[in-house]
Length: 238
Image (tube, rainbow, N blue to C red; front, side, top):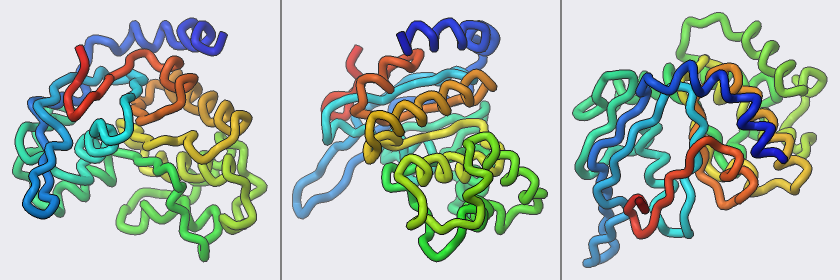
């Protein structure tokens, strides 16, 4: 029922944006050294993400899912291959340029929330804007209303439930109006009720045109997306 509702609600969005490529991954390879052993986390991964698409990256543990998500978000660089975001290659960009790209175009949501315990909800939301000249307070209030946490703005993370902390993390990821939202196991630490609330929030954001990519082991979340990229041993399964 969730999948059917999702398809109906998002049909117009998908038709409107399906022809525009937002992200291209071309031959992505990532290798690590483990002692004398070379570990190939990704091996020649290529695909396009359309603007406004809701995509799940799935596969067994160790398949390379989180590695791929970090490359898409420019939190790491590939050993070989190229990532193109908005028509611009990230290959060869300096650390400063990659940091600016992440801040302006990518929102990232972590499984363990990543909230600073000594800061309030509002202060956590405003963290990504410290080095930005954007008017942030009004945007933060708007996002708190959107995720249903207006009354929690002055609370600290230890006063929130797991679902509330994840909603704060999502709001923080959206503070700079990114083009793409990347989420690593966003329901992994939540019960079914809070997991469903996060899924519905993703539906809402997607209906508004946001491009979303989630790494997940949750079949309900994966099945509710438009498309699944299946990884096995660092390669995309056809």
